[in-house]
Length: 244
Image (cartoon, rainbow, N blue to C red):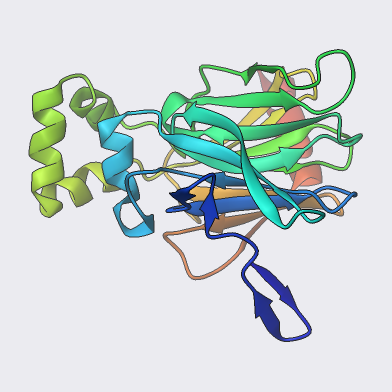
């Protein structure tokens, strides 16, 4: 939907004959094209964790064309499609696959236009949202991996048991209390990971944005926005290196 001058306009609720069940992240290109994720074709927002447990790649990256007023499928078979970001020159768009521990790139321009490839894989946490940084790199919010969740995901039986009992689902979900974000270069190289395994101030980070030398964090588990000075991070890392 589009919000403008106090008015809300629904741009798309279906795509190629199917319902957009779980519209999630969105980014608009300079030409007005809108790229957005549809996390699952089976479950809605209130049941997102069931999609994660089921581990079937039904997520999609969708494209809305303002010229035609229609949406189309840019990528499908994604493992819980989540955050979306455009590169600085808009040569490619990235979509996070939360259940796949990876981010996927779709080239929009150049010789590779239309081609899909893995942007970064085997991340230390489940990627949620992704934002372009001022220097052209990307910040990715990572949901900390839980040993309990890894154990549950190993067998179909354990996934069914956990999904059938909400109390168990909440317990497994709560096991990962840390806070983690990663900075990834435009070539898909992990430059650094900032990690607070105890989540003392904020945990379950789902979004991160860099502005004026600070990182701002959003979380589904808190009622405030977190802030971290990158200058202080560099200072602390320098002191740690000097003392080692």
